[in-house]
Image (cartoon, rainbow, N blue to C red; front, side):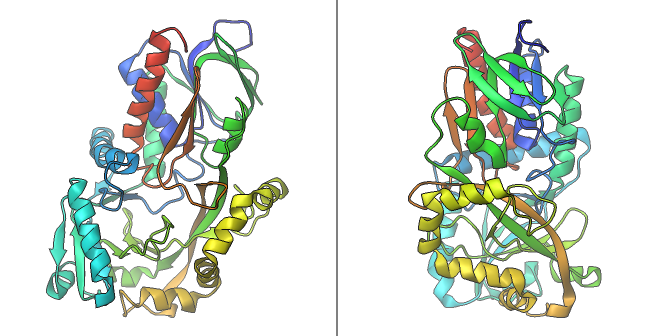
Length: 408
């Protein structure tokens, strides 16, 4: 659509699961809206939406009252209904959080209370209980979330795109946004496939979210740092060693990463990981790709060095486990001693977007920044895929409020 014609009602930048869920929620509520989704890649869900282990999180980890807790619990139920309605497979495999020694019991008890506060169905396990659900696990106690499930979020994203198109929305792939100019009555959007205007814009750009936010005003003080996560794949004949999801007790310390865990996926494969290593590129052809612009932005940001100083030991450990199968397997054997280094192979990898502030603190919760006409989803960490329809409903309500009062 060329500049000067009637603007579309809503343009959504980013064809990942959150952007498409938002488009779906908008058209579900208001079928009359003209909604366009602009995706830079040649397909939807090319990055974080399809490069993950597929866990539908029940919500036991997240701080009570946080958007993570609220949206995960609501969003999981909504996404399970969506998958049932559209033929996307979901398996409730359950999750077992394992304390491998008594020093972890206080943290396990704290997690139990957090889960109950969040309204998550849980079961406390002794040694026999652990073995009943995961016979090959070693531990002194545990916590089971029977509602934890797995699905294929890449498939969910593709189905969401089909649903949006069927409802009259337009999903434009290979359309990279070059600039956003917010005006009193509309937003001008310059793209690689031509310019358009919109009454309201929602950016759900993941790894590029801080750059999109900078286009419409002062750059955010926080920055996106790309963290690469790699998985190991268990040999198929040993998949029986893991029935569902096996997770460690969270260690805290200001990092939202959960450590090494084992996931039985919807296709029956068992993945181990991911780790978290600072990446040289926000998107690249290989795990070790380096993009000069991305690397320079990471190096110039003060928060990068503050983060490195604060978590040097953890960072070195993650990097070592990334390079050494033996180191990773030693961590795995704390939970499943039967898995050896010859039982795994290098598996998939992906890059996750993590918002970091100038003091080097990783922003743990969702962050949405708003102006009169633009909503920027600046931080959408896990469980964003699980919570996507709940996030989309929240963004829908904000957008419709702007459209209805004539300011967006």
